[in-house]
Length: 460
Image (tube, rainbow, N blue to C red; front, side, top):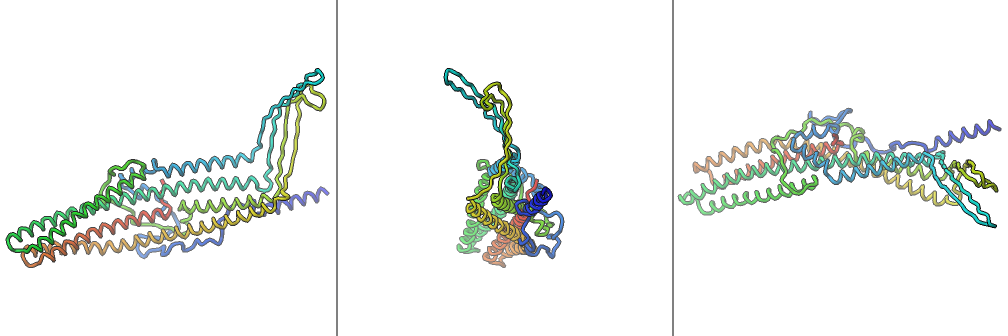
């Protein structure tokens, strides 16, 4: 008989150990993790797919080497309200995790009581000073799964903080480089305005000498005024960008100290890694997976609710109320064990399990979407950098040719062998080429930032 009981107990233990309610979360096998971004290997030497650390593993100070930019990033990471909010979320998750772990320990209660009765001219005092303890035995994962959920929720909060930091670093860098680009455009436009002003003065002198007509003079003034007007627009954009950056820094609007556009040096050799490694770098991907894991444990908890709960409780009391004897005081010990099995709540439990399964499936879809989005961001950043690198080579030739054409046309105009319209066209082409070259360089800077963020960059 005893042998049969032991065999049944062992069989039940094996059966329950194979049940899902005891299993830890594992990433689903049917997720798309291959080919998350297109063309991982470039034909050039600048973009490489590797199986080791990727560009996203590089500390942000090694990517953004400008001292002024580093100071701004550090200020943002220290003062930004979103980061503080993320830190508070971590503290909340940490408190919940501690509460879940403490649930394994017995609960203690101290409940002293006293009674006075007066009957038939007799005073009777009874008292009891009990200490009660209650402990739930976690046979079917009713405590295990909430504890695991609290742990992954805590990890999710940490990953969320990392994602917030990465986004803030990228935002500060983008706005800083935007300011440098605008400074450079303002410098080019100011130089062009000075050149056009001298052209206006030349045309006015030629008009007075009878060598040019009034239409040419007015046209030169029009083009000069147009460039001067663009200076105001650039200055306004600079002011607005500074104010936006100050908002991220959590300080009042003010002038932002910065260096120059041409002095920037960003990495030119990137190791992007393979898609599965991107999973271990992107904090938003990690957070999405931890959300799926939390839903997985919610489903396990809903399954565990179908099984009975075993609770052991005991009480140790100093009392003088032992049956009919009220004196003297003595210790009294009580030990109980109880099993609670749901009987008439099956419909409610089934509904709860269905809801938990639906939430788990939704979290899985969100995780898959996050993976695909991450892959698209890497693909876009890689391709943008490649295209702007190719474009910059052609743009250098265009700027050099436009500069020479402008200078040669101006010399020919002084000799009287070129018309003013040719001079104007050459000057406009040179200005456009210079501004376009600045924009191309800025776009390449943005591509580097996007790629760094897409690969999970932002580490200390």
